[in-house]
Length: 87
Image 1: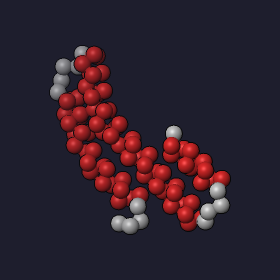
Image 2: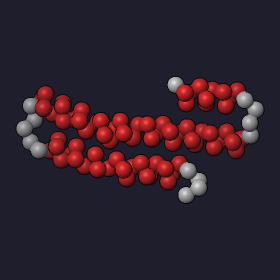
Image 3: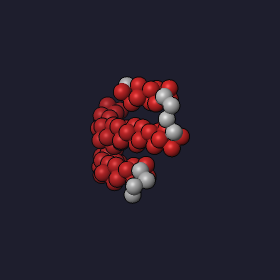
Image 4: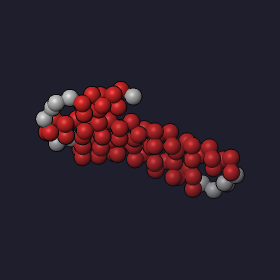
């Protein structure tokens, strides 16, 4: 909500195109950093829960969950490196 309201105010304001682009990139980075833990930390547990409710008896969901959880820190660094110009 806060990001949306800041973005709304920026669009209404008279700022330079370069600054507007910087704000848009920062907004994208914040959105991706918000979705990153949701997908890579909470998502795997949803996979395990669904697999146990469905009755899958193999170890495949556990291995997939383990891989997805270990991707989280790498993905966070990739988000920062690709969405900022300073690096």
